[in-house]
Image (cartoon, rainbow, N blue to C red; front, side, top):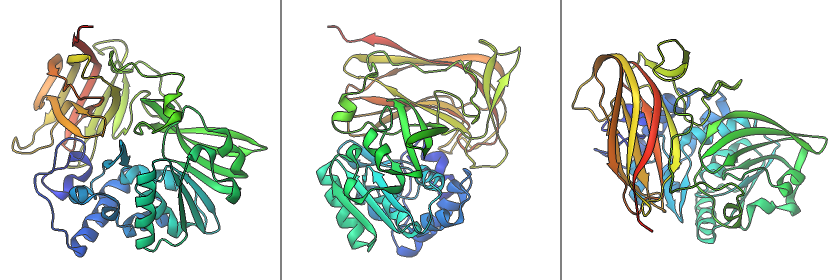
Length: 409
Protein backbone atom coordinates (compact mmCIF):
# COMPACT_ATOMS: atom_id res chain seq x y z
CA UNK A 1 0.00 0.00 0.00
CA UNK A 2 2.73 2.44 -0.96
CA UNK A 3 4.00 4.13 -4.07
CA UNK A 4 7.08 3.81 -6.18
CA UNK A 5 8.64 6.93 -4.68
CA UNK A 6 9.12 8.12 -1.12
CA UNK A 7 7.51 11.45 -2.00
CA UNK A 8 4.06 9.88 -2.16
CA UNK A 9 4.26 8.51 1.38
CA UNK A 10 0.76 9.33 2.57
CA UNK A 11 -0.91 9.25 -0.83
CA UNK A 12 0.08 5.85 -2.07
CA UNK A 13 -0.16 4.29 1.37
CA UNK A 14 -3.88 4.51 0.75
CA UNK A 15 -3.83 2.68 -2.55
CA UNK A 16 -1.17 0.30 -3.67
CA UNK A 17 1.42 -2.23 -2.50
CA UNK A 18 5.03 -1.08 -2.69
CA UNK A 19 6.62 -1.20 -6.12
CA UNK A 20 10.16 -0.55 -4.93
CA UNK A 21 11.45 -0.94 -1.38
CA UNK A 22 14.21 1.28 -0.07
CA UNK A 23 17.35 -0.32 1.39
CA UNK A 24 17.27 -1.20 5.05
CA UNK A 25 20.36 0.71 6.18
CA UNK A 26 20.11 2.75 9.37
CA UNK A 27 20.80 6.00 7.53
CA UNK A 28 18.12 5.35 4.92
CA UNK A 29 15.55 4.35 7.51
CA UNK A 30 16.29 7.52 9.45
CA UNK A 31 16.00 9.59 6.30
CA UNK A 32 12.65 7.99 5.41
CA UNK A 33 11.40 8.57 8.96
CA UNK A 34 12.36 12.26 8.92
CA UNK A 35 10.78 12.73 5.51
CA UNK A 36 7.61 11.09 6.77
CA UNK A 37 7.46 13.61 9.60
CA UNK A 38 7.95 16.57 7.27
CA UNK A 39 5.59 15.47 4.51
CA UNK A 40 2.89 13.62 6.43
CA UNK A 41 2.81 14.48 10.13
CA UNK A 42 3.61 18.19 9.86
CA UNK A 43 1.74 18.39 6.57
CA UNK A 44 -1.39 17.06 8.29
CA UNK A 45 -1.25 19.71 10.99
CA UNK A 46 0.71 18.36 13.98
CA UNK A 47 2.72 21.26 15.45
CA UNK A 48 4.01 20.28 18.90
CA UNK A 49 7.81 20.33 18.59
CA UNK A 50 8.38 17.75 21.32
CA UNK A 51 5.92 15.34 19.71
CA UNK A 52 7.45 15.83 16.28
CA UNK A 53 10.93 15.16 17.66
CA UNK A 54 9.74 11.97 19.34
CA UNK A 55 8.22 10.73 16.08
CA UNK A 56 11.52 11.54 14.34
CA UNK A 57 13.48 9.61 16.95
CA UNK A 58 11.25 6.55 17.39
CA UNK A 59 12.28 3.64 15.11
CA UNK A 60 8.83 2.51 13.94
CA UNK A 61 10.41 -0.26 11.86
CA UNK A 62 11.39 -1.99 15.11
CA UNK A 63 7.72 -2.38 16.03
CA UNK A 64 6.54 -4.20 12.89
CA UNK A 65 7.35 -7.60 11.45
CA UNK A 66 10.32 -7.93 9.11
CA UNK A 67 7.95 -8.45 6.16
CA UNK A 68 6.45 -4.98 6.76
CA UNK A 69 9.63 -3.03 7.53
CA UNK A 70 9.81 -1.55 4.05
CA UNK A 71 6.41 0.03 4.73
CA UNK A 72 7.22 1.29 8.24
CA UNK A 73 7.60 4.94 7.23
CA UNK A 74 4.51 5.25 5.10
CA UNK A 75 1.48 6.82 6.76
CA UNK A 76 -0.50 3.64 7.14
CA UNK A 77 -1.65 1.13 9.70
CA UNK A 78 0.15 -2.22 9.44
CA UNK A 79 -0.90 -5.69 10.64
CA UNK A 80 0.91 -6.92 13.74
CA UNK A 81 -0.99 -10.19 14.14
CA UNK A 82 -4.05 -11.33 16.11
CA UNK A 83 -6.36 -9.06 14.07
CA UNK A 84 -4.53 -5.97 15.36
CA UNK A 85 -2.60 -3.20 13.64
CA UNK A 86 0.02 -0.62 14.50
CA UNK A 87 -1.59 2.81 14.14
CA UNK A 88 -0.47 5.18 11.41
CA UNK A 89 2.27 7.67 12.38
CA UNK A 90 -0.09 10.60 11.91
CA UNK A 91 -2.78 9.29 14.27
CA UNK A 92 -0.13 8.42 16.88
CA UNK A 93 1.33 11.93 16.62
CA UNK A 94 -2.10 13.55 16.65
CA UNK A 95 -3.31 11.65 19.72
CA UNK A 96 -0.04 12.33 21.52
CA UNK A 97 -0.24 16.06 20.76
CA UNK A 98 -3.84 16.13 21.99
CA UNK A 99 -2.72 14.79 25.38
CA UNK A 100 -0.62 17.92 26.04
CA UNK A 101 2.09 15.77 27.62
CA UNK A 102 4.25 17.21 30.41
CA UNK A 103 7.61 15.85 31.71
CA UNK A 104 6.03 15.10 35.11
CA UNK A 105 3.04 13.16 33.72
CA UNK A 106 2.17 9.60 34.58
CA UNK A 107 0.34 8.19 31.53
CA UNK A 108 -1.82 5.09 31.17
CA UNK A 109 -2.13 3.56 27.70
CA UNK A 110 -4.90 1.08 26.93
CA UNK A 111 -4.04 -1.21 24.03
CA UNK A 112 -0.24 -1.62 23.84
CA UNK A 113 -0.37 -3.39 20.49
CA UNK A 114 3.14 -3.22 19.06
CA UNK A 115 4.43 -0.81 21.72
CA UNK A 116 4.97 2.03 19.24
CA UNK A 117 2.60 4.52 20.90
CA UNK A 118 4.22 3.87 24.29
CA UNK A 119 7.66 4.40 22.75
CA UNK A 120 6.58 7.76 21.32
CA UNK A 121 5.25 8.81 24.72
CA UNK A 122 8.36 7.64 26.61
CA UNK A 123 10.64 10.71 26.19
CA UNK A 124 7.73 13.12 26.72
CA UNK A 125 6.56 12.02 30.18
CA UNK A 126 7.84 10.62 33.48
CA UNK A 127 6.25 7.15 33.24
CA UNK A 128 4.07 5.19 30.82
CA UNK A 129 1.93 2.28 32.03
CA UNK A 130 0.62 0.25 29.12
CA UNK A 131 -1.77 -2.73 29.01
CA UNK A 132 -2.46 -5.23 26.22
CA UNK A 133 -5.23 -7.82 26.38
CA UNK A 134 -3.71 -10.19 23.80
CA UNK A 135 -1.03 -12.12 25.70
CA UNK A 136 1.28 -12.82 22.76
CA UNK A 137 1.21 -9.19 21.61
CA UNK A 138 1.71 -7.84 25.10
CA UNK A 139 4.70 -10.05 25.77
CA UNK A 140 6.27 -9.24 22.42
CA UNK A 141 5.77 -5.49 22.90
CA UNK A 142 7.31 -5.67 26.37
CA UNK A 143 10.39 -7.42 24.95
CA UNK A 144 10.73 -4.84 22.18
CA UNK A 145 10.41 -1.90 24.57
CA UNK A 146 12.95 -3.45 26.93
CA UNK A 147 15.40 -4.20 24.10
CA UNK A 148 15.19 -0.62 22.87
CA UNK A 149 15.70 0.66 26.45
CA UNK A 150 12.41 2.49 26.95
CA UNK A 151 13.01 2.08 30.66
CA UNK A 152 10.17 4.30 31.85
CA UNK A 153 7.55 2.19 30.02
CA UNK A 154 5.91 -0.43 32.22
CA UNK A 155 3.95 -3.07 30.28
CA UNK A 156 1.61 -5.84 31.35
CA UNK A 157 -0.95 -8.23 29.86
CA UNK A 158 -4.53 -7.79 31.05
CA UNK A 159 -7.91 -6.18 30.49
CA UNK A 160 -7.07 -2.56 29.81
CA UNK A 161 -10.60 -1.36 30.47
CA UNK A 162 -10.06 -2.25 34.13
CA UNK A 163 -7.09 0.10 34.20
CA UNK A 164 -4.10 -0.27 36.52
CA UNK A 165 -5.49 0.81 39.90
CA UNK A 166 -2.35 0.25 41.97
CA UNK A 167 -0.58 2.99 39.96
CA UNK A 168 -3.53 5.40 39.76
CA UNK A 169 -4.24 8.24 39.57
CA UNK A 170 -2.93 9.02 36.09
CA UNK A 171 -2.44 12.51 34.70
CA UNK A 172 -3.26 11.36 31.19
CA UNK A 173 -4.93 8.28 29.66
CA UNK A 174 -4.68 7.32 26.01
CA UNK A 175 -6.96 4.62 24.61
CA UNK A 176 -5.93 3.07 21.30
CA UNK A 177 -8.93 0.77 20.90
CA UNK A 178 -12.50 1.89 20.43
CA UNK A 179 -15.22 1.19 23.02
CA UNK A 180 -18.73 2.56 22.74
CA UNK A 181 -18.04 4.87 25.72
CA UNK A 182 -15.21 5.46 28.23
CA UNK A 183 -15.07 2.57 30.72
CA UNK A 184 -15.85 3.67 34.29
CA UNK A 185 -12.61 2.29 35.81
CA UNK A 186 -10.60 4.56 33.51
CA UNK A 187 -12.70 7.55 34.54
CA UNK A 188 -12.10 6.66 38.18
CA UNK A 189 -8.33 6.33 37.68
CA UNK A 190 -7.90 9.63 35.82
CA UNK A 191 -6.74 12.44 38.09
CA UNK A 192 -9.04 15.43 38.44
CA UNK A 193 -8.07 17.90 35.73
CA UNK A 194 -6.46 15.09 33.73
CA UNK A 195 -6.98 14.40 30.04
CA UNK A 196 -8.13 11.28 28.21
CA UNK A 197 -7.88 10.77 24.44
CA UNK A 198 -10.21 8.02 23.28
CA UNK A 199 -11.89 6.89 20.02
CA UNK A 200 -15.48 6.03 20.91
CA UNK A 201 -18.70 5.20 19.14
CA UNK A 202 -20.06 2.56 16.82
CA UNK A 203 -17.73 0.03 15.28
CA UNK A 204 -17.30 1.85 11.94
CA UNK A 205 -18.53 5.30 12.97
CA UNK A 206 -16.10 6.44 15.63
CA UNK A 207 -15.08 9.87 16.84
CA UNK A 208 -11.81 10.73 18.51
CA UNK A 209 -12.58 12.60 21.73
CA UNK A 210 -10.47 14.67 24.08
CA UNK A 211 -11.98 14.41 27.56
CA UNK A 212 -11.07 16.40 30.66
CA UNK A 213 -12.04 15.21 34.12
CA UNK A 214 -13.71 17.90 36.21
CA UNK A 215 -15.29 17.22 39.60
CA UNK A 216 -15.31 13.50 38.91
CA UNK A 217 -16.99 13.73 35.49
CA UNK A 218 -15.70 13.90 31.94
CA UNK A 219 -16.20 16.90 29.70
CA UNK A 220 -15.85 15.80 26.08
CA UNK A 221 -14.57 17.63 23.02
CA UNK A 222 -15.01 15.90 19.66
CA UNK A 223 -11.75 16.13 17.73
CA UNK A 224 -12.35 14.29 14.46
CA UNK A 225 -13.90 11.16 12.94
CA UNK A 226 -11.57 8.17 13.09
CA UNK A 227 -11.39 4.43 12.56
CA UNK A 228 -9.69 1.87 14.77
CA UNK A 229 -9.68 -1.84 14.08
CA UNK A 230 -12.08 -4.09 16.06
CA UNK A 231 -11.13 -4.77 19.64
CA UNK A 232 -10.32 -8.23 20.87
CA UNK A 233 -12.32 -9.77 23.67
CA UNK A 234 -15.47 -9.27 25.68
CA UNK A 235 -15.77 -5.50 25.18
CA UNK A 236 -16.20 -5.92 21.44
CA UNK A 237 -18.56 -8.87 21.85
CA UNK A 238 -20.80 -6.87 24.20
CA UNK A 239 -21.31 -3.89 21.92
CA UNK A 240 -24.97 -2.89 22.07
CA UNK A 241 -24.99 -1.71 18.46
CA UNK A 242 -23.21 -4.10 16.11
CA UNK A 243 -22.57 -3.58 12.40
CA UNK A 244 -24.48 -5.71 9.89
CA UNK A 245 -21.82 -7.04 7.54
CA UNK A 246 -24.49 -8.53 5.26
CA UNK A 247 -25.79 -5.06 4.36
CA UNK A 248 -22.76 -2.88 3.57
CA UNK A 249 -23.44 0.73 2.68
CA UNK A 250 -21.75 4.11 2.57
CA UNK A 251 -22.77 6.41 5.42
CA UNK A 252 -23.50 10.05 4.57
CA UNK A 253 -22.55 9.37 0.97
CA UNK A 254 -24.73 12.30 -0.16
CA UNK A 255 -22.89 14.64 2.26
CA UNK A 256 -26.13 16.20 3.49
CA UNK A 257 -25.32 15.92 7.19
CA UNK A 258 -24.35 19.27 8.68
CA UNK A 259 -20.69 19.75 9.54
CA UNK A 260 -20.04 19.94 13.29
CA UNK A 261 -17.91 22.69 14.79
CA UNK A 262 -14.72 20.75 14.16
CA UNK A 263 -15.34 20.98 10.40
CA UNK A 264 -15.05 17.25 9.66
CA UNK A 265 -17.53 15.47 7.40
CA UNK A 266 -19.65 13.06 9.52
CA UNK A 267 -19.26 9.39 8.70
CA UNK A 268 -15.90 9.83 6.98
CA UNK A 269 -12.37 10.19 8.29
CA UNK A 270 -8.79 11.09 7.32
CA UNK A 271 -10.10 14.28 5.75
CA UNK A 272 -7.62 16.33 3.74
CA UNK A 273 -8.03 19.49 1.61
CA UNK A 274 -11.80 19.27 1.43
CA UNK A 275 -14.52 21.86 0.95
CA UNK A 276 -18.14 21.10 1.87
CA UNK A 277 -20.09 22.87 -0.87
CA UNK A 278 -23.69 24.06 -0.75
CA UNK A 279 -24.77 24.68 -4.33
CA UNK A 280 -27.79 24.52 -6.59
CA UNK A 281 -25.88 22.36 -9.06
CA UNK A 282 -25.49 19.51 -6.56
CA UNK A 283 -26.58 16.40 -8.48
CA UNK A 284 -28.33 15.03 -5.37
CA UNK A 285 -29.58 17.07 -2.45
CA UNK A 286 -28.00 20.41 -1.66
CA UNK A 287 -24.38 19.58 -0.84
CA UNK A 288 -21.32 17.82 -2.19
CA UNK A 289 -17.62 17.68 -1.39
CA UNK A 290 -14.80 19.18 -3.44
CA UNK A 291 -11.10 18.36 -3.22
CA UNK A 292 -8.49 20.79 -4.54
CA UNK A 293 -4.73 20.35 -4.56
CA UNK A 294 -1.99 22.53 -6.04
CA UNK A 295 1.05 20.62 -4.78
CA UNK A 296 1.92 17.28 -6.35
CA UNK A 297 2.02 14.53 -3.77
CA UNK A 298 -0.04 16.36 -1.14
CA UNK A 299 -3.04 14.40 0.08
CA UNK A 300 -6.66 15.35 -0.66
CA UNK A 301 -9.18 12.65 0.17
CA UNK A 302 -11.78 11.04 2.46
CA UNK A 303 -12.01 7.47 3.76
CA UNK A 304 -14.75 5.36 5.29
CA UNK A 305 -14.68 1.92 6.87
CA UNK A 306 -17.46 -0.56 6.14
CA UNK A 307 -18.37 -4.00 7.47
CA UNK A 308 -18.79 -6.62 4.76
CA UNK A 309 -19.10 -10.39 4.96
CA UNK A 310 -17.74 -11.99 1.79
CA UNK A 311 -19.51 -15.24 2.65
CA UNK A 312 -22.87 -13.46 2.44
CA UNK A 313 -22.22 -10.68 -0.09
CA UNK A 314 -20.74 -11.92 -3.34
CA UNK A 315 -20.79 -8.68 -5.34
CA UNK A 316 -21.22 -4.96 -4.73
CA UNK A 317 -21.86 -1.97 -6.95
CA UNK A 318 -20.11 1.31 -6.17
CA UNK A 319 -21.46 4.49 -7.76
CA UNK A 320 -21.13 8.26 -7.45
CA UNK A 321 -21.52 11.54 -9.28
CA UNK A 322 -18.21 13.18 -10.19
CA UNK A 323 -17.11 16.52 -11.63
CA UNK A 324 -13.48 17.47 -12.18
CA UNK A 325 -11.06 19.86 -13.86
CA UNK A 326 -7.32 20.32 -14.49
CA UNK A 327 -6.52 16.68 -13.76
CA UNK A 328 -3.36 15.98 -15.75
CA UNK A 329 -0.77 13.42 -14.70
CA UNK A 330 1.30 10.57 -16.03
CA UNK A 331 -0.71 7.47 -16.79
CA UNK A 332 2.36 5.48 -15.74
CA UNK A 333 1.95 6.54 -12.12
CA UNK A 334 0.29 4.53 -9.37
CA UNK A 335 -1.70 7.31 -7.65
CA UNK A 336 -4.58 8.98 -9.42
CA UNK A 337 -8.01 10.57 -8.79
CA UNK A 338 -10.46 7.73 -8.24
CA UNK A 339 -13.06 6.01 -6.11
CA UNK A 340 -11.47 2.99 -4.44
CA UNK A 341 -12.78 0.08 -2.41
CA UNK A 342 -10.35 -2.24 -0.66
CA UNK A 343 -11.31 -5.48 1.08
CA UNK A 344 -9.58 -7.01 4.13
CA UNK A 345 -9.78 -10.39 5.82
CA UNK A 346 -10.12 -11.11 9.55
CA UNK A 347 -6.38 -10.58 10.05
CA UNK A 348 -6.43 -7.20 8.25
CA UNK A 349 -4.69 -8.70 5.24
CA UNK A 350 -5.23 -6.67 2.08
CA UNK A 351 -7.36 -8.67 -0.37
CA UNK A 352 -6.99 -6.27 -3.28
CA UNK A 353 -7.97 -2.82 -4.53
CA UNK A 354 -10.84 -2.03 -6.88
CA UNK A 355 -11.38 1.40 -8.35
CA UNK A 356 -13.52 3.57 -10.57
CA UNK A 357 -11.31 5.83 -12.63
CA UNK A 358 -8.78 7.17 -13.12
CA UNK A 359 -10.39 10.54 -13.82
CA UNK A 360 -8.37 12.81 -16.08
CA UNK A 361 -8.80 16.16 -17.78
CA UNK A 362 -12.14 17.92 -17.30
CA UNK A 363 -15.76 16.83 -16.97
CA UNK A 364 -19.10 18.24 -15.87
CA UNK A 365 -21.21 16.22 -13.47
CA UNK A 366 -21.63 12.61 -14.56
CA UNK A 367 -22.62 9.40 -12.84
CA UNK A 368 -20.08 6.59 -12.69
CA UNK A 369 -20.57 3.07 -11.38
CA UNK A 370 -18.85 -0.29 -11.36
CA UNK A 371 -19.48 -3.77 -9.98
CA UNK A 372 -16.86 -5.59 -7.94
CA UNK A 373 -16.57 -9.18 -6.77
CA UNK A 374 -16.22 -9.51 -3.00
CA UNK A 375 -13.58 -12.05 -1.88
CA UNK A 376 -15.26 -14.74 0.25
CA UNK A 377 -12.79 -14.15 3.10
CA UNK A 378 -13.60 -10.41 3.27
CA UNK A 379 -14.67 -9.12 6.72
CA UNK A 380 -14.40 -5.38 6.19
CA UNK A 381 -13.50 -2.77 3.62
CA UNK A 382 -12.41 0.81 3.04
CA UNK A 383 -14.02 3.22 0.61
CA UNK A 384 -11.68 6.03 -0.50
CA UNK A 385 -12.40 9.08 -2.63
CA UNK A 386 -10.23 11.98 -3.72
CA UNK A 387 -7.21 13.16 -5.68
CA UNK A 388 -4.55 10.98 -3.96
CA UNK A 389 -1.64 13.32 -4.64
CA UNK A 390 -2.62 14.57 -8.11
CA UNK A 391 -3.11 18.32 -8.65
CA UNK A 392 -6.42 19.79 -9.80
CA UNK A 393 -9.99 19.64 -8.53
CA UNK A 394 -12.56 16.89 -8.16
CA UNK A 395 -16.08 17.02 -6.69
CA UNK A 396 -18.15 14.02 -5.61
CA UNK A 397 -21.71 13.42 -4.54
CA UNK A 398 -24.09 10.51 -3.90
CA UNK A 399 -21.34 7.98 -3.14
CA UNK A 400 -23.20 4.69 -2.80
CA UNK A 401 -22.32 1.08 -2.14
CA UNK A 402 -25.01 -1.52 -2.85
CA UNK A 403 -24.81 -5.30 -2.35
CA UNK A 404 -25.92 -7.06 -5.54
CA UNK A 405 -25.39 -10.76 -5.10
CA UNK A 406 -26.17 -12.43 -1.79
CA UNK A 407 -25.46 -16.00 -0.80
CA UNK A 408 -28.47 -18.25 -0.48
CA UNK A 409 -29.52 -19.42 2.97
